Length: 571
Ligand code: ARG
Image 1 (tube, helix red, strand yellow):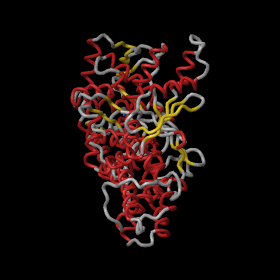
Image 2: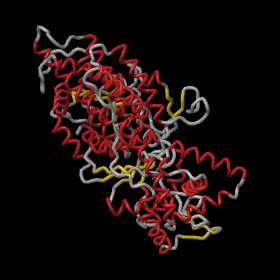
Image 3: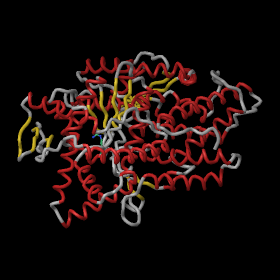
Image 4: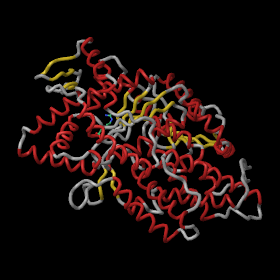
């Protein structure tokens, strides 16, 4: 409402001056700059100064805007601030009403759910590869993808999570060849064994390049429906999926679908794509391969290799065709590492050329890498770390932590806390900063009780809950005659929650939510350090402070759950 009002006035002021610049409202970093601020006067001035010499500085423009603004409900004060900002202060009773609206949780959720009502998003995430172990890279995709899924769901979108498992492709030909030539019994297969076979194949190929042909031959047989090849492939899928499921259980992640790449082979979708491409005359032969030239891209998209094998890219196109037909999504989001940027550029352009969907409805998030503090993420022997080892290390450390600090907990409670802290810590580490950036994997920071970490948020939540178990449940409160600085700081944070959820979703930036929760927790802890909540002589004050505690815990719980992190009642 506030932003609409300001938009209107600015648009009118702009018209009379001859500029058209939309108003962007931000939350200023400094509390003495109000609750909202806009740099509209700065922008308008730089646009206008040539044509309108009578305008001497942006501050005048800011003053002009403040004068033109009619009273806005909920806003108590509007000021022009140098060099050319307008700052807006929200009224405490408005802030209180916004906070109370969050406490009516069911209604609050309904309001949020109106935002995306009727829209559908498919989120393609996790997607580990069969016959390889679940790497630390797929962990990022899993955690970020799940957070985005939860955000959209909270905002009322129909959300479809699809785990696009890497369970088809030339690499299976190599594995089948190795399993055959080494006569590995299928019931003895493990993921570790499969990885070993894969490495051995590469050693062998280095000595005898002709072996590649064997791998290709077996994949061709698989794609031609050979029974034996299929049986071996199935065994590989079975052991891998059992391992992945174990990891998903540890992480507490459940993905709606896991159709996998093979689905598009078995259901004939790849053939349909080739037919579509032929019909539209998009297909070309290039040295035996079938490719599609794409506008603006040098590298053509290869759909079928010269040996007849289908490609990863063709399967992604088939997947789009399928998803569009089945779910009619408004948006498809790919939570896949940044190294696949070119691949997705090709996929999106090709899908548009094929008439499946508009490129604007396709988003590749391209997350950054995970590095260890010392550099590359690997074990001492140089091989990449497996996720399970990482999780176990986290559990070990979290148990130590709980042993030291969780005095009033039973052994079972301690174990539950350790798990929530370890898993929460690992997830938060993936979500706490812009996802495109590389992240550092540092246990000290991940498990820090004081710091920008999951345990800090979980601890703050537990602290709030423990206060609430000792006080009455309050759903509303009256404003005290005078608010102290810490109370006001909290009130000035709550109303931002829905805005944060919306921008975190629309910009695919879960770190907006992470940062917001951290700020809220800091403000709450400061409040708690300085002021008593319970047992004050002024009962109304106790009521009001219980109310603040209540709103804080509701936001922390909803926020943490949205990030996929378990809030803790006791810690
Ligand atoms: N399995 C792939 C990999 O590990 C990721 C798949 C991502 N999703 C997709 N639709 N291509 O590289």
